[in-house]
Length: 115
Image 1 (cartoon, rainbow, N blue to C red):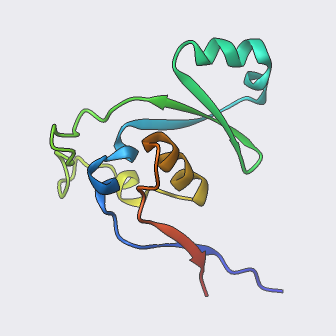
Image 2 (cartoon, helix red, strand yellow; image 1 turned 30 degrees about the vertical axis):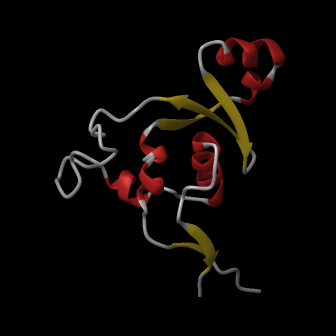
């Protein structure tokens, strides 16, 4: 059986002006941080943990230094903009985190099976 990969579809709508994906970073952390005291320590520092795909992710609120007051990318179209910005979201759980951060469905991307 051949497994088809999921591919991202859609166009960025700027999270309906919220630029939500430009306001946090995700870092993989060790499962030990799920222990109640360690998790509490992270939470009182503003870090939220999420489990996805067998990994533990720390979501850290951190607005991109290039995000303008109008919610636009100040380095869009330049060599300074990381390719990661263009490639994000990488998986469905990224979309879920963006929408959760925004408090509503804002990300216009989705994933579907490719050929």
